[in-house]
Image: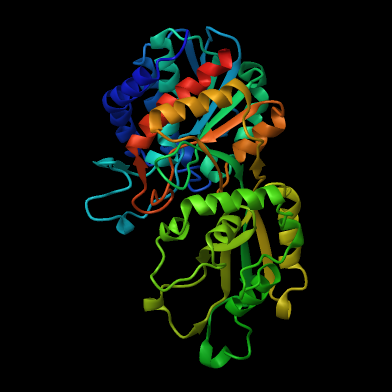
Length: 470
């Protein structure tokens, strides 16, 4: 039985309006900080609350042959596993997460708040609306629509975790413990990505990995008047600058650890050229930079390569420095910086994590106390393009529903689950997609979900999943 694409599109619109958006607004109201940002997550109970909310929504969907169970291993963050017995051959694993990044409400625009779902078409604003609250709703709804049409579909497992924003450090034991329940998937679908516009259906073929840690430099046991100590006691901030020069060229931005780089193939160069021609200057223009700022390397192609295939370092946090308004003339005892390195696919995160620690801690300038506490390490992901009936169904549904063919892209962010699953299921096909796009501000102020593209993706995903059983 073939899929009625027009009916899929109409039904996706109906279900988003009547079912998904109301529940998603309730989800936004739960802070649900990821364990790496909220050590007392268990006591607060908010990660459990998101699972309870989603489970209550599941109960109302009237999905046949569905079961779900909340899994807990020791003191790790919980995982929800939803299973639906298929009516056709094949198996699919769907992945999403319910934990969130922290918010700073004072940075959100007037009338908006990270814990309040606000609809201003075409957007739904709120922390977690995009990353990644909508993912589980979209995937389950795609399968529900196939049931409604009586179209054969594969056995499906929906794995929903609550530690992704912390690097999924709690997930590996669950993948091992749930191996039998997860089966042997033909297709792994991940809803935590997006693309450079909201018109196409975007398929992410590559993701960067991540290593991060806290670099601490201590020079004294208490603050000393800068008139008494300046020029005598080396500044902890200046020592930080010296240490950062070991890992990054401050003039060019090039990461100076060779093992963090990969050879960029001719194929990737060709794909970057094609994407640059399609997207033009929009790659840079969609970034909220000040008017006078220039990119690290000019040209859309180079920007794409910088964002996806070259390593980059960012200082994402600092301790030991008082606010400028209350800073006295005191040489501070210490400067602590949180460093984040994005690494291209093909780099072994565990190896370079150790290299960073070694390079920063060895031979500390002036004999200062220097420590680098490793925080997270996750490999990147690079999958071959999908082929066969699934790829054909994706192309046909995308063209029919959006009027445009699906497009392959890369995303500079990290989804640790992808590398874990690729290692576990090397013969599976991967569909990493989503409706993130320009200006969505995931992790930042005014995070927002693009509703029309999310509805389209729901319909396209349904048709694509049905092809697994053909």
